[in-house]
Image (cartoon, rainbow, N blue to C red; front, side, top):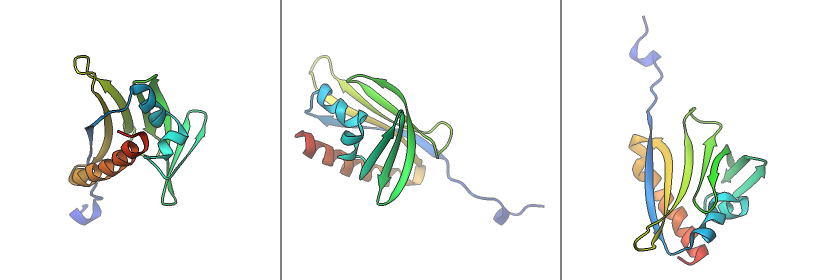
Length: 135
């Protein structure tokens, strides 16, 4: 009969979306969410691309994702190859029709008890992006 200690405890990863207002034009912002050189300026230390496969490198560690969807000047969606079957990171550029304000929406997955840390990491990343693009 299995005991509590025989079971591997796994925390469920939850999907979350963060919104970051920016002063950048969608056309400019899109280059930073869709190209290896753009993503390497703010999202990862380095990014290599082979077709639709993107390898993201952070502090020597790497993760691989497939670009599964894109809409020019609107969004990119990367499916993580080493994670759960439904896990992805998606970058969406949203322009408010009334105010013309532009925001970057980031959808990602994290363990529920790590959401605050994930938010802090994204804050730092997007701050780097804003410094790069001037807004």
